[in-house]
Each structure stands twice: as structure tokens, then as C-alpha cells.
Image 1 (cartoon, rainbow, N blue to C red):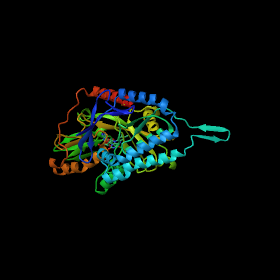
Image 2 (cartoon, rainbow, N blue to C red; image 1 turned 60 degrees about the horizontal axis):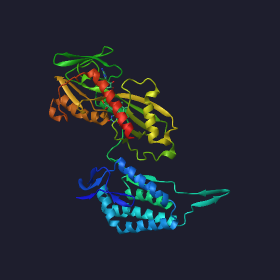
Image 3 (cartoon, rainbow, N blue to C red; image 1 turned 90 degrees about the vertical axis):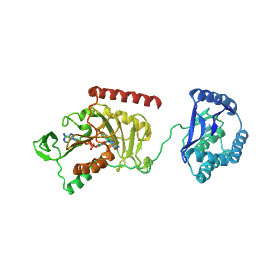
Image 4 (cartoon, rainbow, N blue to C red; image 1 turned 120 degrees about the horizontal axis):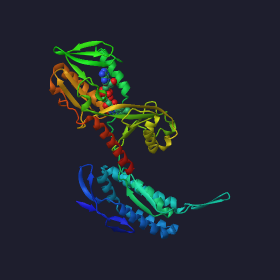
Amino acid sequence: MSKHLKFFIDGAWVDPVEPALLDVIDPSTEEPFTTISIGSRADVDRAVAAAKAAFATFSVTDRAERLALLERILAVYNERFEDIAQAVSREMGAPLAFARDSQAWAGRAHLEATISAFKNFEFSEQRGTTRIVKEPIGVCALITPWNWPLNQIVCKVAPAIAAGCTVVLKPSEIAGFLDRRAGVVNPLALVHELARLATEAGAGLVVKDGVASLRKVGAGWEVTTASGRSIRARKVLVATNAYSGALVPKLAESLVWLHSFQIATEPVPAELDFILPGGQAVSDSRRIVVYYRRSPDGRLVLGGRGPMREPRSTEDWAHLERALHRLFPMLASLRIDHRWFGRVAMTPDHLPHLHEPEPGLVMVAGCQGRGIGLMTALGAPLSRYLADGDPGVLPLPITPLRRIPLHRFRRLGVAAHIAWYRLLDGLER
Ligand SMILES: Cc1cc2nc3c(=O)[nH]c(=O)nc-3n(C[C@H](O)[C@H](O)[C@H](O)COP(=O)(O)OP(=O)(O)OC[C@H]3O[C@@H](n4cnc5c(N)ncnc54)[C@H](O)[C@@H]3O)c2cc1C
């Protein structure tokens, strides 16, 4: 396997100050195909110092010298065109034709365009009584995204050179991925539609009258609501999830519940419709995740963890507003029209749990805040199990209902964990 372990600093290929290796995986084979070095703070310092020193002389070069440098880079680029296309293809999994005709081509096209614009570029112009002079600004720190490496490198490096600046260039260590299978649902509309279908199929629905007690009667169960209505059934499914109370002993203590908070802006103005134009739902990859999407009426809806206690004022959503403004500064002036929250249930093994502590008393809980699809999908096999009693139809095993040891303190522990993770996320920003 090849190795590319040196950095190009101060006109020479040099070893990293602190060696640290990374295998580069070819996405088409999922096999490593080369090893590179990961830069450290010391390597960056070294590159910045070299670029700073070079700036003193490079910034006073004239147009002809910079043009000669850019033309030399273009000549070498053209000589190595196929190598560049092959490297892009293997690094990012682009098909070869695309790597040649779009990726490597874009680097060449931008170099040619920069050279052509630079030949007659006016660095100094008179506007009325004002003289505007464009001067090299200093060392440029350039970071390129993963998806159009050459396009972005050349669009940054070539104008910087033309302007007389020296550069420190690195690829982004962060990348995103787009899963085109993903979609969004409106949870309230989903619940309404499920209720409509259930009613159509003959189910009786009772709302605003919680179950107050659950009692074993003969071979079945008696469910009594807060208003005193009762119903008897051979089998009962308890799906109270993070809102589980004292109805079933041990269920609430087998889970830790957290709060998810969300905000929605006023509708985003039409000129900002480039934000999530495909209606994508986004989730970041931090320890404490922030997620966002556009609502059908054009709002930006953003959510994340909230305090463990119930909110007291709009201040309890302020961290989400800050996240929104950091991600989309252009939305900072938008009004926040809606703020809301709810509970989600976590289990120690991060999996949903099915229990049947007594025959005919089935329960499902704990989807780690990802229950919209998961719990809906579990509905069908659970109803088949209730009807036929065949555990083979269940996608998860039925496990004993176990209290989490020191449950009361567990919530404090989770709160401390969230605060710690938030701090780490903040330090890495
Ligand atoms: C702000 C927020 C954002 C979220 N975002 C996502 C997301 O993007 N994707 C995703 O998949 N999930 C998300 N979730 C999580 C998702 O909402 C839950 O995982 C899902 O609702 C769990 O479904 P469930 O039916 O198990 O429980 P729940 O929807 O919590 O329903 C439990 C119900 O039991 C009722 N109940 C409790 N006790 C009684 C009683 N004694 N008698 C009668 N009824 C009772 C409660 O009132 C409640 O209506 C989010 C949650 C919140 C709060």
C-alpha cells in the first residue's frame, strides 16, 4: 500500500513534527488504499511560520512573477491530470469519468480562469477623488471541503497567489453525508392518521382520561380510568414510554427519561429558500446532537436536548436559539414563533425493550428519542403477538423488567453526563 506521509511546507516535502497516521479508505472497495499523516498543532504552527516568513518577499513580487508561478502550477497540473483524477476517484469514490471530467477538470478550469482574469486585473483604480488599492492581506488559512476538493482548493489558492498572499491549506477533517432514503414526518399528523385508521378498523379511542389503575381479574385485566370508566381485556399493551408512572411497578424505574426541546422560527423569507432546498432533515454528529429541518409552511425547526427539569421561561430554549444563529446567522433576526418540549425514554443498553412480567401484560418502552418510526413499526408485530401469542413475530426478545440500580441518582448522572458532553462539544467547536 502506498504512503503519503510528508507535508509540503516552505517549498519542501517534510516529515510531520508529531507522526500520526491515517488509512484512507477507498469507498468503492471499503479497503484502505494509502496512508497519510494527520497534522498536529505543531505542524500547523510550522506551516504558518513558513508562510508568514515567505509573505515578506512574496507579497512584493510583481504580476509577471506571480503569473509565471500560476502558469507553472497549471502546467504541472496538466502533466499530472490523470494522477489527480485517479486520486480523487479513490479518495472519494467518484466514478473515474466524473473524477476526470468534473473533479480534476474543475481544478484546471479555475486555474485557467484565474490566470486569464489576473492578466488584466486592476489592483489600483481611481473612483472619483478616491484611489482604491488592493494589496496582499497576509497569510491565508484555507480549509477545503471533502466533496469538491480540487474545485475548492484552486478557487482559494489561485486567487490568493495572484493577490500576492501566501497560504496554509488543509482539507476539512469534517464531512457530512446525505442519505436520500431519509424523509420527514409531522408527528401530530401521523398520530391523527393512525387514530383515524384505528377508528375505521373498529378500535375505540378514549382521550383526556388517563388510566388510573390496572388490575388482574381472573385470566384477564381490568383497566380503570381517572374518571372511573373501566374496561376488561384478556391482554393489555402498556406503551406509556417516558411518561410511565406508577401504573406498572418497575417500568418507570427501568428507563431514564430526558427532555427534547424544539423551536420554530417564523416562516423563512423567500430569498433564503436556499436553506435546505430539498426539504432535508439534518442531524449533526456531536455528542449532544442538534437537528433541524424546514416545516411545510417554511419555518426552520431546530431541536436538541433541554434541561432535565420542566422549562420555566423562554430562556430554557436559549441554547437552541444560539445554535440556530451559529448555524444560520442570516436567520438571527427571525422571530421564534414556537417553543415546545417533551420526554424521551432511554434504556441502559440503548435498545427498545419489550416486557411481559405477567401473562397478558405486555409493554414496550425506550426508543432513545427515535421512536416516531420505530414505535410505529413495532405496532404491527406487537398486535400480532397480542392476537396470536407467537413470540416469533416479534423483532425484539421479551426481556425481564429490571429496575435501574440507584435510579433516582441515575437521572442526576445523566444530567452531569449531558453537561460534560456539552462542554466537550463546545471545546471542539
Ligand atoms: C421535541 C421532540 C423531538 C423529537 N424528535 C424525534 C425525531 O426527530 N425522530 C424520532 O424518531 N423521534 C423523535 N422524538 C421522540 C418521539 O417523539 C418518541 O420516541 C415517540 O413519541 C415515542 O412513542 P411512544 O408511543 O412510545 O411514546 P409517547 O409518544 O411518549 O406516548 C406515550 C403516551 O402515553 C401516555 N400516557 C402515559 N401514562 C398514561 C396513563 N396512565 N394513561 C393513559 N395514557 C398515558 C402519554 O400521555 C403519551 O401520550 C422526539 C421527541 C420530542 C419530545
